[in-house]
Image 1 (spheres, rainbow over the protein chains, first blue to last red):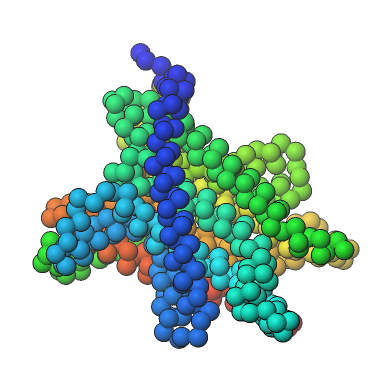
Image 2 (tube, rainbow over the protein chains, first blue to last red):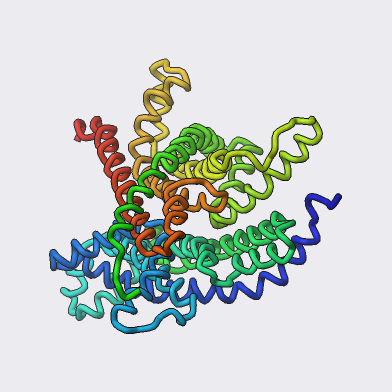
Length: 235
Length: 237
């Protein structure tokens, strides 16, 4: 009878899994960049003067918040090529990673729009007026007064959103993307579905360590951007 | 696929998805019933810095927050049968571990996950309550239990409600991962129905609508309850 639990499978999984983090990082990195851009546009719609745009942006955030990532992933994976087909485009040959990035960009934008909005609203209106009254242009006020203060509020939430995205990204394997999770499934399949637990534990360790590293990184940044705030309290 | 949506299947899929709602709700409610008291007690252990329990709680929270739910599901789903197998063989219990109903795994996985989230929710809510409230309660002769029951917890709930709402919505969304241990909830039922004619878009649209309705209803319910809980504050203001 074979051993139930064999640690050697755990150790062997690491060198095989780690190179596939590249795919995971690519998905997270691109989704964060595009999602933040789209999220800022959504925030502008939310705090802007157009009623229709505000309703649309708020509706979008509510809908996306209520959609499980896995459902969004499949909707994009099946839906986008179908929509493309209506316009005579054949999107079935497009790499799966494109659909994964699209889905997570849509999701991250919804989260980011709230992060940016709460940071923006935390800044007193008087700050802007004070900046303008000393002769700064609107752009200068944002660049030198509003953004540095808003960043302090936004960074912890941004860090949490990034960690959440990193973890939700684990679901990309469901549409067949070979990232760390996808590779783990392949290892298990090649072991004839035995010793799955060891491989999953290796996977958990990888995610755990990376999440802690990201968290620590953001705590550091928080201290750097928050230094102006603290000196004001102590002086 | 240029012929567009199959509306009749979309309609059919919508009702199949709805038929999964009771399972999803059952898992959600059981997970919350387990996680609420456990989370609260562990939050107290962190708040009062009880040795050992505090360290265990912080490693536990770090693990749950640091790993994707799907990986937690994989681990629990592959480790529990191994452990039970050893136990059952040792004591000659004649239960086939592969016939355990998946809903038991769902209860374990989701209460394991939600408890950790709620510890943090309650801890931050505890920190928001002025220590003087507790001292005042004691000085008029209430016991610790009475002070918590009548003074601290009612105030704490108001603070915790928005985060509890988020946690509940996230929990409902996470149950869509029940497919990993073949739990017959909203997602899996509809997906299986779609397999017959490859109507995946319709199936996922139906699932999407059902989750949207379900989560909106839960959010609305929380908002109503939150207003009810906060009625004392409103009166004071």
